[in-house]
Image 1 (spheres, rainbow, N blue to C red):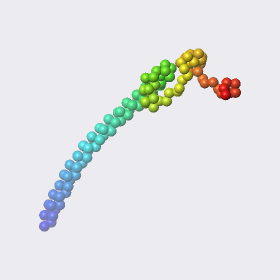
Image 2 (image 1 turned 30 degrees about the horizontal axis):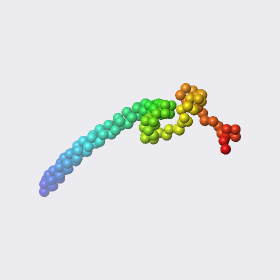
Image 3 (image 1 turned 180 degrees about the horizontal axis):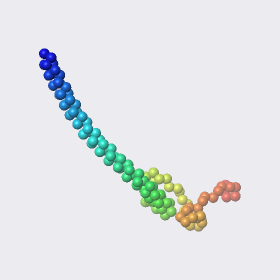
Image 4 (image 1 turned 60 degrees about the vertical axis):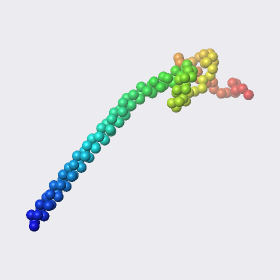
Length: 118
């Protein structure tokens, strides 16, 4: 009788070990595919962080050109992407006013009693 109980207990333990081994293999395989997805996403993040300074420089140059040249197509593109472009005076006024540095807009006049019109 004890041999019969030991036999069935050993068989049950072996079956349980087999089922747990199969479950472990399935979980390992699932984890590998998830790890591959995480690695791909991390690669994208790393690439974006390397490209980010270049993108900022490019958008800054485009912004400066749009302000300097007053190009409506570039202004439309930049405003559609969230840039806020300053309103510039007419082109003739800008040409008359001396700029402190090349490509820089002149500083606005300060308000005082002499240049305020009623």
